[in-house]
Image (tube, rainbow, N blue to C red; front, side, top):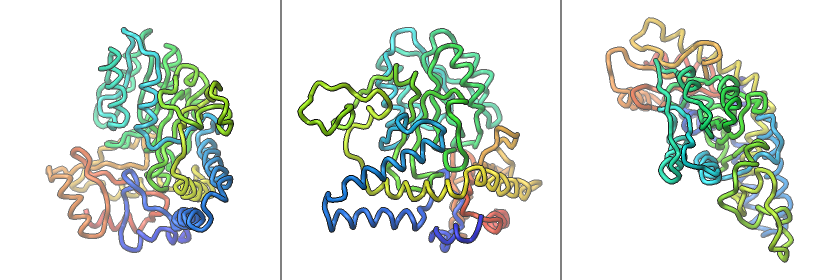
Length: 373
């Protein structure tokens, strides 16, 4: 990626920032957009309210394009957890149903399903992990005629393992189960084609690979998912004609937009739109190829060193997240702390050091990390 992109991220002047799987720095274009909207409210109140709505709708279209879905299938919530919680509370569970997922999912993709298990008597089936990989064969073998939902992360937060969504989606569809995917560790590092991957539900948020302000969650519902998910939290914009304040009998919107209950964080959508435009103008395919190169450089540079590569580097399973482990057993928290003292930002996760470069990083950043390690 070129120096223009790096120049938009002031954090890089201070840090060798390799932690996009936690929170990405925000580009100046997004900060400027947020500040402009706040200044508008300060100076004009609600005079430009139609512009606020139009900005949110443009951001929605950009997200939909990244997922290859229709804009009305994407609802804006607060975060990834809200999206899965809305589904867990909105499905008509019955005794004997089961949910199939992975034992080491990030908690946002676990606690909503645990709640459904405890509250509605649904069985929660969790497949195991083998050498940093989701055991897809085991996961698929757990799906049966009573499975109502299968849930997995597109990319695992603690290993970087990238799931074969289409294969899992086919198994879920064969059982007439809904297929839910946590997309937060993928969207922005690469694109999706959710319809062809047979994904019914996708939940994610703005603050990782999308390089946008925290607080903009997004939930995709396919048409078949929306038929089954009853909105559990509704408000004035959930109905078909929200500005008709006199009609109190009108129906909810027939798509995912019914799950948007009311006024959102308008200024954040201005920042989200700016970051989404930067990513789409750069090209998600270009970003994915670029990150493949940076992570290959990292793994090659650590070959034969005191570190083992935990993350799968098999084509189709590799991602922009690389997790490493010290062969001598040095604590990952200690390693991350010592790297921070050198101005290099990574994350300790479980017993590994997680490294997550993005399109604003370059080969010099990777070389500096290898040397420090």
